Length: 149
Image 1: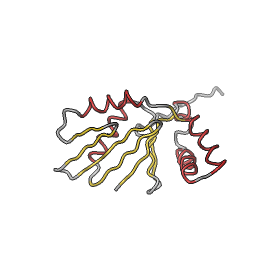
Image 2: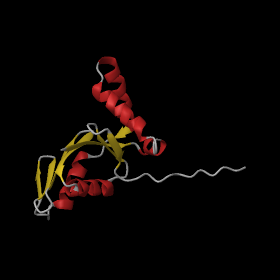
Image 3: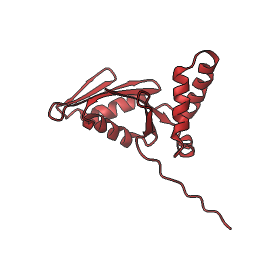
Image 4: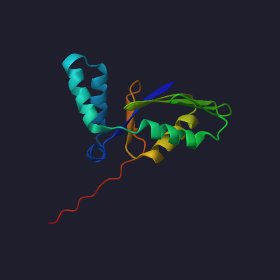
């Protein structure tokens, strides 16, 4: 089973930390495992660098993207894709501030959710704490700054 936490990063932060995603992962990981004052501080930092993804609008967007698929089901902010033929399963749960994607089998179902999220907004960061993997759902273009000599 694969489990991802998905958050929408502030656009400026996304550009600043493009290529340095490990620092963002470390902040989220520290927040997840901390207590007391450190948990409060990291929580403030996370709220500052993330954005609300508009749960109601995204919920509707995902539903409209998949309602025609026979392998799709929906119930109260939870979207499920099951592919019997390709043995893939993914469940995307929306909550205020973050989403959770749980998947099993082949990656087809989770990839379908990632594609819809990528089309909805450019700055989603997915984190798999168990595998210590993280990354942008949509790669951030590198900004070239020209310097005059």
